[in-house]
Image 1: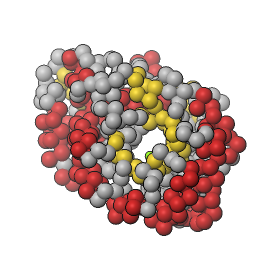
Image 2: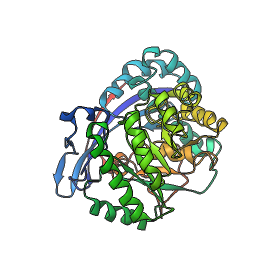
Image 3: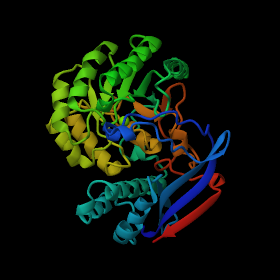
Image 4: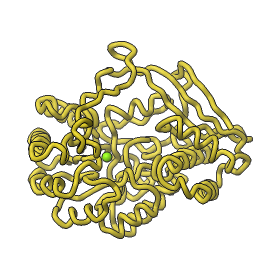
Length: 397
Ligand SMILES: [Mg+2]
C-alpha cells in the first residue's frame, strides 16, 4: 500500500449552540498583566439565537488501495501548511501502515520543530495514519493496540467556559451534570497571583460551593491552566485540602518542574499536568523530577497516538496514572480503552466544547449515563459526515 495524496480540508458548517455559551474562561498565565485579566469574548461566529458557524481543518491521507485516513481538527491553518510543506514530501509514496517508521523519520527530519507546531502537525499525521491502518484491517485502533480492556470507561464532565462568578449558577450546573450520570466533574479556576488574596478567596468560594453541592465523596477536580506561581499554589493547596479534590491540574507553567516537585511535597492533593508537555522525553523529565502524580498528554499535541503509547509505558513503570487531555475524544477513547483500567481510569469530556470539536464527524463520541462506550467502528473513529459540510476548501500535496 502506498500514500498517493495528502489533503488539508477546511470545512465550514453550522451547529446548534447558544452563541453566548462562553460565559467565562479559565485563569491564564498572562493574567499577571492586569490589562489581560478581563474576559475578551471571542466566541464562535453567531448565525442566529441558537446556531453558530464552525470551521474544522482536517488532514486526509489517501492511498492507492482507496483506504483513507483522517486526522483533526487541526488548531489552525498553519498546521496544515506545515503538513503540506514539510511532512508530505517525507511520506508521499510510502506505506501508510508503517506508522512507527514514518513517525521516526518525520521527527528526525524536524529537529527544530520537535516541540510546538511541527510536533502538533506530526501528531495529526500520526493519528491519520492510525485511522487509515485501522480502516485497512476493518478494526478499531483500540483493538490494534491491545484493547479493548473494558466495554465502558467513566467520563468526567469538564466544565470549561461556564461562569464561575455566579455561585448560584455553579450549583445549578453542578447538579445538572451530576444528574446526567457523571460521577466526576472538573472545574476551572478564574484567579491567580494577579488577583492576590482576593483571588484565593474567590477560588475557594468556587471549590467550597461545589463540594457542598456535590457532596462528600463525589470526585471533584480543579484546573489552573498553568497560571499560578509557587507561593499562590501553596496558599491554594493549604485551603483546598479540606475540599478533598481528586486532583489539582496544571498549577504552574509546564517547564517549572522544580516548582511542581516542591508543591507536591507540601500537599496530599495529587498534582496533574502534561497537556502542554510534548514527547516521551518531555514526560521523562516530569517523571524524573517527581513533578506530577497524574500525566495528561494530549494525543494530538504530544506526538500522536504512537507517542502517547510510549508515554503510557513510561507512566506504567512508575505507577502513575494517565488521563489524556480531552481535545480529540475519538483518539482518546481508542487509547484509554486499550490500557489497563489502573493506568487510564477516567476520560475527560469537555461538555461544551467536545460537540463542537466533533461537529464534522459521522459518529461523534458522547457518554451514555456518564460512561463512554469502547469504540467499535474501524480506525480512529474519524469518518467525516458530508451532510455537515456547507463549504470546503482543499489544499493538497
Ligand atoms: Mg487542563
